Length: 176
Image 1 (tube, one colour):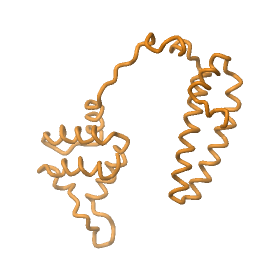
Image 2 (spheres, rainbow, N blue to C red):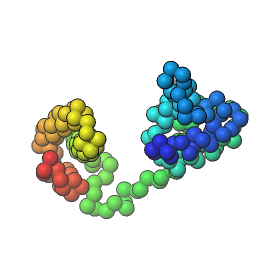
Image 3 (tube, rainbow, N blue to C red):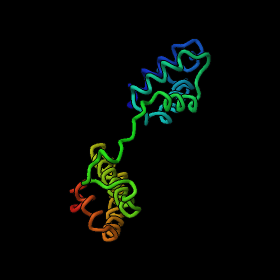
């Protein structure tokens, strides 16, 4: 969720009588520091930003019916409670071309984690380039090269069947 989406739920909470202490006027204190309400809002945002905007707003609606200001832990529990539950797909629906959980194996699991990490690092590198953060880009480039070397050591440990699974799902692995 972004800051604007967070602000919608935050406004719902601060509109309650018990939330008036957390209302921000957007003005800083006389010393140029952010107000306590702004600090509190930023603290909550950083702790809860990983949740989706719809789930966040729904949790705020639930909490707004309460009698007191919700703690971060209370909000996290509420977010878990209101998050839609997704039923696991039975292995039989995947078909013969996919492996079952029992066949997965630790080597394949670790290899896929590494590939996923490399993809994430690449996305972060693109963001760093667009945000013109050369120090961050340098750190990410180092991690990227280390992860590629680690993957190069992992791939030979896979069986032919496991390698076929990796190449089927991640065809770009040959360019990594």
